[in-house]
Image (cartoon, rainbow, N blue to C red; front, top):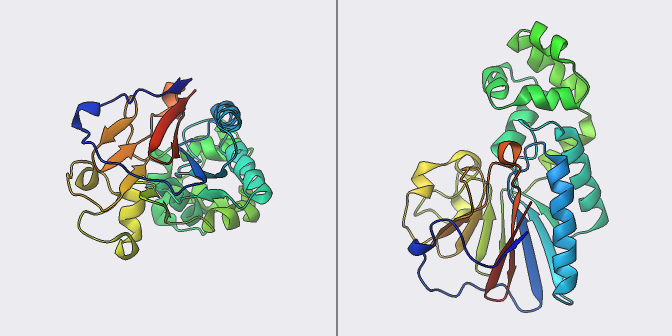
Length: 253
């Protein structure tokens, strides 16, 4: 499904022309959370849309939170590994759920309760853990098992993710920015975890921020940011934004 109409809170948007450099096209994908089925659908839409628009130097950006909650975190990670191996124009941004999985793999036991609440059960089941095994483990035992069931090359891939990515007047990040601080000086925790301090702020960041992390029913458009986490794991709606020149559009499963 392609949306040229900007849905969500469009009445708050002010007319300002944000640019992608000439000759470039960008697609950014919101939080996938283990929905390999929706990812494959959306990638098909992106391929068709990209081909229909004619030649361009196209970049595909994933805004993080590949894992947890949905049924096939392993499949999502492997699909993105394939995409990035095939093209230098695939960019992956680190989210808070990547951080949790990496810390769990490194056996940081303190993350056990958060990993469990954040949907880690579904992630480990995608790597072959049974429901019975998971439910029998203590939180400490569960964290110890992450390093045994998640392949090291998957963790190496997650560790390679960027904190943010710029293209023209747009900045792509998982959670957002702490207002008033340049992107290069942001704390990593804010880039992956910030919420209300960013989403409630009217501050001009000097760029248009494209982000995920905060779930909304539809695309959330404001003068200084656009949120595209539409809760795919539960809503069946995985969203991408397309950008070229001053134009933008949306694709959604």
